[in-house]
Length: 313
Image (cartoon, rainbow, N blue to C red; front, top):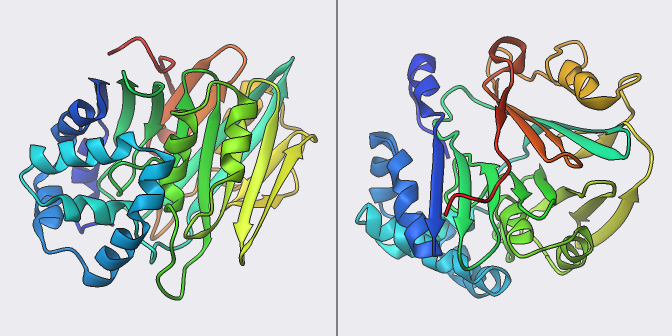
């Protein structure tokens, strides 16, 4: 879900949205980041096929994360559009494969997570959401072009979940969209064990893979072709590109090693090219609860520290 705009204008779309209260309040607050292009897109009549699929999938989505319905209602009323237009955001069965690199490394007893996410320069939603609701658990994640979802989510109780779409669907499919899942898991889990068990119950509408990480344990969940598998990650460093496991790029250890991989074109971490750019990168020390984000390509933008989720609302 992108719109054509200049690369210079795109740089203005990195915003930190702090939102607390109930999820309806959070939805109203999210509208602070909406640009005229977003208002225009969301004000158009919903795509009939996407809307039909969203209506069929809605009960399952809201059963997994009930507060999301209130959040979407808050967004819809905040920008004066129909609720159905927001519901479509939870159910884009046509979404194509993601372009990302995810790196897991060890530093002492802690797991370090690194991730870069790529898209076309015209992608105009890159907001960092710090959500501190009073009706679920606090989270932090970078929102792309779908409202209510984040491709990655850091939970206040020490879980990290990221999603990747492996292949595009040939037609409508039921279940929560892959980009909705990370928030659903972290905002309803107080431990890595709870997050893993909850993840096993999710049947996403996309063939997709997920990495679920705590301070010292990590897992990969793959749902593809009607089958699902959960595997604990025991060998580090671990690298996945576009959601698929790869061999490790040499000796990667600690935050410095992860930072070097994400900033390197030779190792494939910095993903921008002629038609794509690295929209953002992140590094999370799961043990010490330290987070760094790069607003754009890390090879040029560098990383800045961001506070752990919670403590806002």
